[in-house]
Image (cartoon, rainbow, N blue to C red; front, side, top):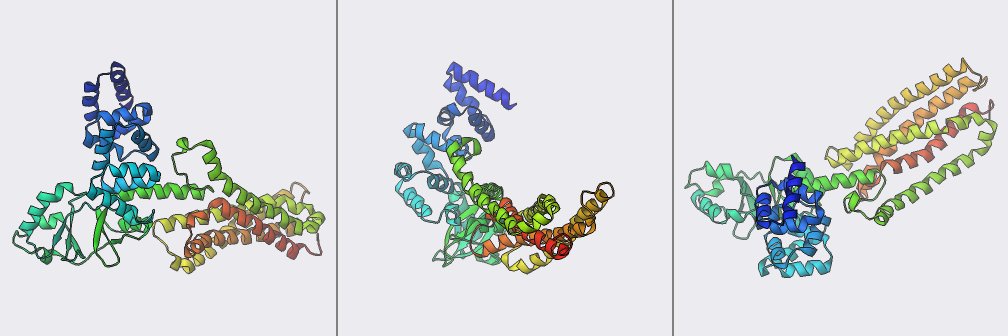
Length: 457
């Protein structure tokens, strides 16, 4: 179906039939137009310029930033002015925050005085704050109004609101008192006072809260919109669930990139310049490489022991990979649980207790497999020598210790970083694996010295 649309549009473009092109585009779903822009990016400006302005706005607001930027640079001035003016304030703020200062100045000039003040106000909040997401387009009413007056107010001003599913009750100073779902107002007696319908079970966001906090609050509460207040509980705006879904997707993508051991990409992968991609990846690779160099230092410390029992070196990859794998598992699980709001820093002891138990259980299973592997091989080959039993015990006990340590390190590191105010996703799987590689070798050779001194060492 999408291929047919693309083929039809290409024909209309070749025929330069703007009237028919406009009619065709205006009858497509918004998502289909977005797909067209992805498939035919060289005609993105033509599509936005041809669409009726309201549909152009709806398409523009769901495009990725690099595409929006290309359109802004080439869109005719009159259409650009209309587009910027009709963009919802939260989408406009998101766009402005991505653009360079010079580009923002040029676009802000296109706005009416009232909207200009509003845009500059929204841009005054921290980049990742709730204030950057909110829109001042909402319906607020006074607590002493009747239901009939409220309905008249909604009919008059509701069309300019981001949503009328929820109505906000304020006092004379603009302080937020409560929010009421529209269905409760529609079903109430027209003469009832709106203040009598409130239940005071208010959930609100602070404009200076981090956006991740807003994501968690939306996740825990079944709301299409939440009010945003300042430190004095004055209503500033609202945040709607569509903006939260967009931000949640961005946060998830960023966390996945960090967990993979790279800085978060600012653009889609294919739009990222090669050198930019290199810069995002090289930092972590150098840090991890320097970390892995410590494994050579650790092995150098036990060089004399390895020289006496070369057989020990055979199991180094087995030991460090098992510890790294268990640490990566634990780190990924904890980062995801923190992102979903399932655990907080205050739950550190519960997490540690669970990881001690699960780490021991995992270690015992892997240690037993390692011991049985050595025992089984020793029945067919003399490769492990006459002291195979001690070597098997060394490997088995080392695996228990290394896997336990990996589980603890992987689970505690994200919580420690969160406590220090850093992003838990920074404790990526490669970082945890590198940390456990070095310490795993120390555990392994320490256990070897304990069991094999006087026999092989």
